Image 1 (cartoon, helix red, strand yellow):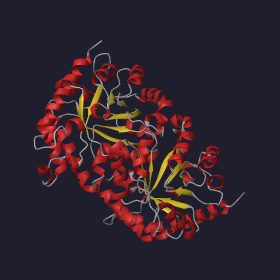
Image 2: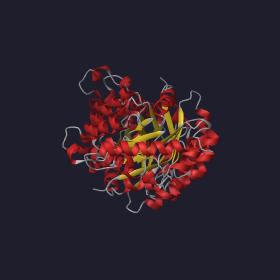
Image 3: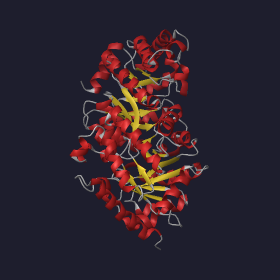
Image 4: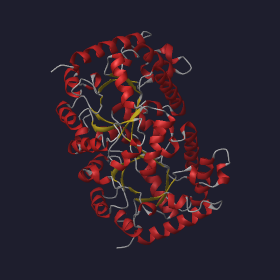
Length: 266
Length: 266
């Protein structure tokens, strides 16, 4: 199934635009989990079981797995297999970007080795760095456009609109998306106007300061879809105790409902 | 030892600005190597043994290892250990870039898990995405500035000078560098003027079309140093037969000499 169909189906089935970021930090997970053989995977499994009816996608950030070396990547592979078994799409947040053969090698790694449904990439190296990812027509590729951090002011401010236009142009097979931080509301309006109903992945809700109401209102397409609102820490670390999964489920439900409240608001 | 000292020492000891890119493609290595247990590592080992007196650094691009999954990353780790044993610096070309905790996780992965001496990163997310790498004061961080591919025209043209100025400003601990493609001669002059004697990693010689003479002349600092001229395919695939290592050594020697011919040219 094409990524966009898988995403649309999950949005409809679970009535949700919420994406949960699986950015596991061993310093923040309960002691009882840490004592198990594969704590990263076990933590993810419990979070996924508690939230799989409430979300439209999961977004593990590969940085948090790479920092644990081979072991971390093995936990990531198991986590992605588990998500696949739920039928929900996995967006592997990897922000890769290189040229020619190197870009093709990264695309192969993300889509064939890790078997993600979608990924994030950096646009810095231009169209020919993006194209090897787009050759995977059934996979989704979200290009960084405007991010939620303060450093976004350094270089992105002069080019994010060019990025949006270029990605729209490259979206011949409906397999592109953009990443726009939830703290960039004015620009989000403009970007949504440029890209029509292309999916926009929006991190930065909660911990990073983005407001739910305006983010959803300005982020969705005219039908109230195609915005993927990501929250990581505020959900997966809702509790640091043994009830972490239950707490994550409650937090996810709250955010899912809050998002839905504004999806069709005028 | 600080990366810059290690680099300067290698440049002096081997009288070389040449960096060999270890971008192993299983389709291009001899059949006799492919039959061995760890062909990627064995291929690299033979190349390293044949070139270790002729280069100032090695640059494996992690994409070519990631595409083989866990096995590829294990070969990369062994390759880096081998390079470390020669005393030459390893620049792990990874082009990472993320924000906050995620950027710190990538830096940890590159410098502590893979134990590289230096790396390449993308500037798209701005200074706060670069800083976690710079906290490793003994490691080197090369920020992408202007690349050799055609797509560089898409977004970089409006911001590469801002990137050079920003990295110069961030270089408080002499641990920064820039990546500038060998096909960008006019801009290379300008960038060298901006960053003084900061090291510039210059890929794009040979296969990608950059000319040695002008690249070296415009790339080096006033003392004829601090340009790291990378060549990958033209050296490591100089022959596809069993004499590949010997051929790589000859090709490296030729390029080393050609580079030295122009280091002090006016």
